[in-house]
Image 1 (cartoon, rainbow, N blue to C red):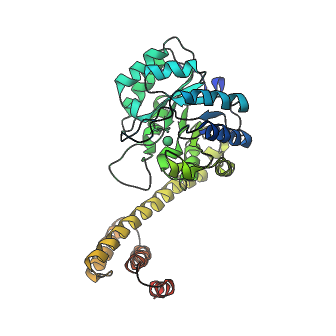
Image 2: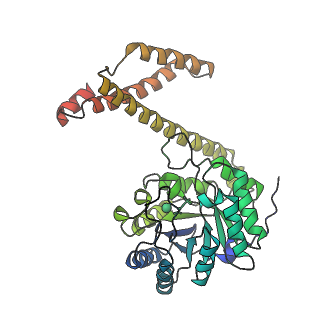
Image 3: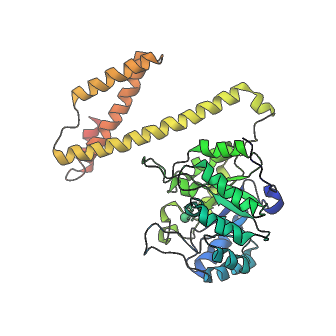
Length: 376
Ligand code: PEP
Ligand code: MN
């Protein structure tokens, strides 16, 4: 199914300062100082095309910081005047749209919680009728492609042609290393349905922590997404929202400098090269294997704590025998040699034991004794 969006390419409405297209700025505008100082540092990197800042924040629980409100528009104006960076804010109501436009904001985005609600999206779309402003639609919180497409259609039907999507991951009941599961296939599916629609990846909200951001950013570029939106704060340690996932402007600069920009596949010599395609497949699988091993270790830690609390020994031979037998048989059925599967499992097992030993000895044992024990 091809979708018929009437859209203008990204480079007709966004000046790409440096590849890849980058929107950056704090999760929230907190103070005039914080916003303006962050904007200056971001502008200095020469990598940022648009300055973002939330001024109306959708919060999960009441009582959390709900955004600085309209005064933030004045700060954004100053940041723009001093740095030359166009600005972007999240809008969630018709009133936000009105105020943001009056305040001279250049790009509007619709947040994940709003996209999940067609009434909200329609209200925003109606407020946008007759206005020529770029709008970016985040995916809904829940993994529902139609809801995402529906929101993009509502905005497009209101006459907005400077349109793009943001992939920020999806809420999942399964707890993994990510704050929001990337579920790449949904973003790929949107791209397949609407190849001309720019998709911008939001590694900050996918990861929920700084450490994973470079990997997700690189993966998004490798999947030929057209840009990134990344949260950056002058001092993330004191950020009022999303502190764990924000990066200082210089850390962001560093990450961006390491990203590899590979040219899109189809038709180029590189993609015709079978080896490149196969290696790409391997890379994807290796990433998954590493992610799954990390998830396994998180469960191992939970088990370790449980065993500690209940006075159960770390090693339970029966359980280990069972794992070994079942998995090697499964491996054999999948054409893996018994020796290989055994080696792999032993490696995993010894790391699990090491982790659990660490947990068991956490209190009341000296570092060197622990060192000795874990290597025993
Ligand atoms: C944000 O961009 O700060 C935000 C609230 O994101 P999301 O709507 O993706 O949760
Ligand atoms: Mn945020």
